[in-house]
Figure 1: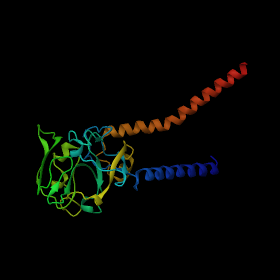
Figure 2 (figure 1 turned 30 degrees about the vertical axis):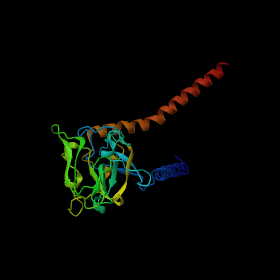
Figure 3 (figure 1 turned 135 degrees about the vertical axis):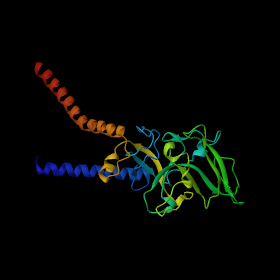
Figure 4 (figure 1 turned 180 degrees about the vertical axis):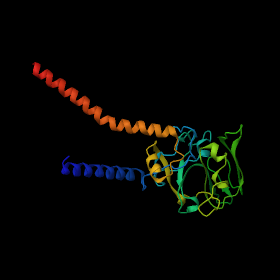
Length: 264
């Protein structure tokens, strides 16, 4: 192939990548505009993964906090409430990407269960519930645990500051606990309520399987399911085959057209 053709095609490919990243950055208001999911803490099907949920190897677009108001699980399950019935990624409420205690280690992508908001008269309010002005928060959420008929319950939790209580969707791994009683930061400290300034963004559209390549290259692909690898292989095969098929169809159409013209 001519060297000029190679340079031209390489320049075009680089330009398309830059255009795509730029467009996504403008659309989401954040950079980088997407993250690769590394762990299985958000999986709904721990064995096979599922499209619509957030699995290891998925790419997730990150919507800037300035572009989207976070709706918690409590607000999305409040019957008669403004946000009742709101769902993202297979469950009520929004999924947020945040830094544990504002630190510098790998951000976490978990669902916002509720938010503790300081009451002007003292104590704490929880939007989406009838809890107002309490010194500690006790609440049973309509979040089924995988063991028995129990629900995820928050008992006598006294926030140190305003912020979100979060958890992963994977009920098998989180043990139906919330992060503020089980998740630690890079220094081994328990994660406190997630402040607004610790929130990097809200999880928007999911692009399944594609990020598994990055995890493989970095040696952290152990949690990617075999099913995800199979689906990725099929996707790659389709991407490679599509231009060939289009070219074959185009050649067939042109050949038929030329034959018809010759017969005339």
